[in-house]
Length: 141
Length: 120
Image (cartoon, rainbow over all chains, first blue to last red; front, side, top):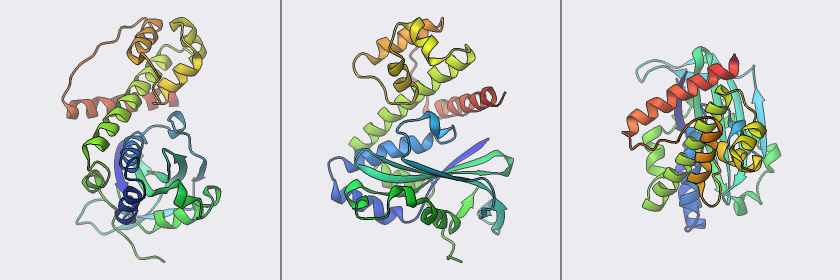
C-alpha cells in the first residue's frame, strides 16, 4: 500500500490566518495536525483525537488522477472519507482517499480556529461542501 | 465543474506547518506518541489480547492503555508505563536512535503488517 500526503491549496491562506489569530497555540496545533495526518495510512478510528463528524463515500466519486508529472489526468473511482475534527483550539478536516491498487492519500482540506468555526457551517453539515474541494483537486497516486 | 487545482505536496506542507522550532518540537512529540501507540497496538494484536486483558497484565488502567494506543500519551511517567505494557506482552522496551529514513521505512512496514493482521 502506498501512502501520500497532500494539502488543499486553500491552506496557503488558512494556515497563516490561524497563526495570526492565535500566535501562541496556532503553530503548535497545526504541527500536531501534521503528525496526525501522517498516520492516516492506518484506520483513523484508532487515533486521537476522534473526529466530531465523518462521512464516507464508498462509490460514486470519481477523481482526477495524475500518475506522474508528465501524464495527463484521468478520472478514477475512489473511496473517500472526510473526517472533521474540533480539537487543539482548531477545526480541521482531513480526507482519506483510497484508489484502486491500494494507493492511499491523506489530504488536509481545511483548518480554522474554533472561534472562526463558530460563525461558519456546523461541522455535521460540512462534509458535502468539502467533497467539492476533494473533487476539484488533481490527485497524485 | 470546478477548475482543477494542484494540491500542495509534502514539502509545501512542511513549509506551511513546520515553520518554527516550537512547531517542529510539537510535531516530533506528537509523532512519537503516535509511534508508541502504533507499536503497542500492533504487539497487542499479535499477542491476541484485548486492551482490558493487556491492561490487567501490565497492572495499569485500561483507559491509560487506550490513551497510549491512540497517541495521546499518559501524564506522568510515560516510559515507565510503556515498560509495564511491554512486560505485560512478555517483551522489553529497547530505545534506539535511528536514521529518520530507516524509521519511516519501518513505520511503513509496520503499517502493512498491521493491515494484514486486521484483514486476516
